Amino acid sequence: MQELLAVMTITILAVISPGADFAMVTRASWRHGRRAGLWSAVGIAAGVQVHVLYTLVGVGLLITQVPWLFTLIKWIGAAYLMYIGWRTWTDRSPVADVMAERVDAVAGGAMSDRREPNASERAPWQEAVSAFRTGFFTNALNPKTTLFVVSTFTQIIHPGTGWALGLAYGAFMSFAHWVWFSLVALGFSAGWMRAAMVRRQHIVRRTIGGALITLGGLLALANR
Image 1 (cartoon, rainbow, N blue to C red):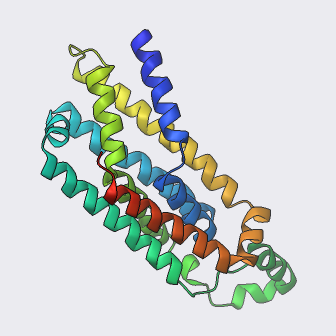
Image 2: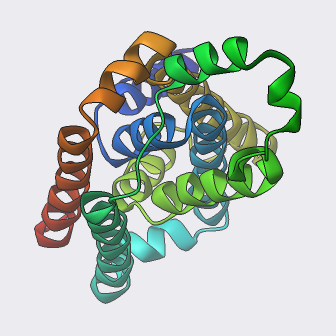
């Protein structure tokens, strides 16, 4: 029971700590709406399983003990964050005001049936795949998640713990990530919140993009 409580406590504290995942879900929710934010949260939760699986087979300990391998993963993760951050910073495509869209939809009446669907309406699965992919790689390439999972399994979970219980702990880690970042997505995609961010989209782009670039830079420079 003590082991379970320790895993739950550490996981929750790690999940709610602001970082790249938080910035990425905020970006997806504001830029593309609730669906994208929620799929990004699913991707982040799935990315946790990458770390859980290689830790269970012993590769996680190898990664943390081989400096050049850990450094390589760290640089790839940092480069990915900085790339997404730069794309966000330099993005000039307008973000529609969802509140205005709803008013237009009501005012348009029957005419809305004859309008051309926008990109998200034509291919919602593409939006979902893109959001999932971004969330997944953000977490799968995050060395902080590597250290969190590996340290939890090596320092807190009993060495004799079987695969079944280890997978159950990993499932809880993913579940906690999914719940928290789904709440983040719902919050930042709420009509009034997103409308306010859209009205200041230039500032929001620079803030989120700058945060991702900074996080990537700090990650690249960190010793561990």
